[in-house]
Amino acid sequence: MPAPAEKLVLEPSRSRVGIICPWWLAFFLATMMSVGGHLLIKSGLNSIDEVSLHGTFSTRLGVDLSQPAVLGGLLIYGLGTFFWMVSLAQQELSFLYPLTSVNYILIVVASALFFHETITLRRCGGVILIVVGVVLMNRVSGSRRR
Amino acid sequence: MNPKQMIWASIALTSLAQVALKHGLMRIQRESNGGLRLLVTMVKEGYIWLWGACFAGGTALWLLGLRHLDLSYAYPLLSFGYVLVAAMAALFFRERIGKRWVAIAVICMGVYLISGS
Image (cartoon, rainbow over all chains, first blue to last red; front, side, top):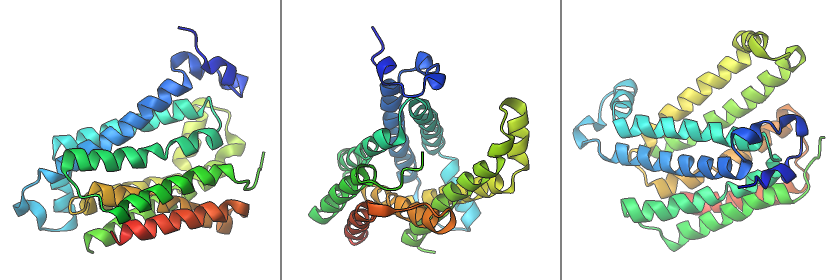
């Protein structure tokens, strides 16, 4: 399969990263790992029994971190950050950044599906506004420093 | 601190972490000839440590707060971090916000809706 990323590489000196993983695959992995990591963290936190909800800051944090799902989620989230960097090394931030707003939609849909959270109309409207805002952030001209 | 305050504190800390990282990296940029030398310079840079501390504290507060809140409530609030980072970048690095204030205003409205949901 030819790599369509080659045409889009803006800085030839950094194009070597594309050999490891093309930007679109890295971006896809970063998105999946960021969303998946958060879902795993939340599922781990949800499984903590009510008794361990009390105690000091550090003991509660210890309980949180002792959940395998929380640790695993953090790890996957961290790995997602690595793939985000791989993607970022090949594409401009102003192109990639608005695409990350899809995370908000995925998280809200997945929260409703897996954790049966109630998504009110107000919450839905808030997420839509946030997505629009994040997309706008790099569409309207700010300062172009380079 | 109640869970909602923890989430807001976490967002503030991780935003501060971004600004500290940017400032730290700008300071060591002059000496960056890559490899081990760069790594040593990074370890010696105080702002990099500030980034680490803020990042760790922000993550801890995030976990503690998220336990009691909906993920579909807390996660979208993270977008307020962009607003804070933009404000701090304008304040500390004199970066121009320009017309991006429109985007910032839209994000703020979204965050306002979520925070009351």
